[in-house]
Image 1 (cartoon, rainbow, N blue to C red):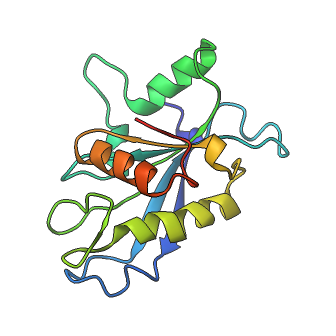
Image 2 (cartoon, helix red, strand yellow):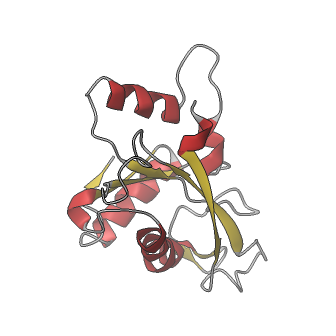
Length: 164
């Protein structure tokens, strides 16, 4: 993994400030920048929001695999082989004391849907060279992250152009 391609943005959430379990509302936002991101300061990139499964959070998806690639290594390889277009991958932290948020608003854990849609997407569009339109924004996940990806895409069709 090329460490210089991973950056960490800090975000203080307004909507998570009073969440019922008292989970942190200041969170780190890990971001994968595609090869060449720093070479052309005028180039903008599509964004893929990667949602972690229950009891996990975004940065844990960077873990090294014994005999396989992690998501960052796979993306690097696919871009290098011309099988995927360069894209920014963002790994939001929606972990809670209960294990996860399902990426939806909940009276039990907080407003994680609003956190993503109202705060993190505009924040990332302001701080990264994104293509800030639904046609260039996707959301993906597996397990609870997959459920969250599908729910967010269905509930916010003007925000996400694809889901997996």
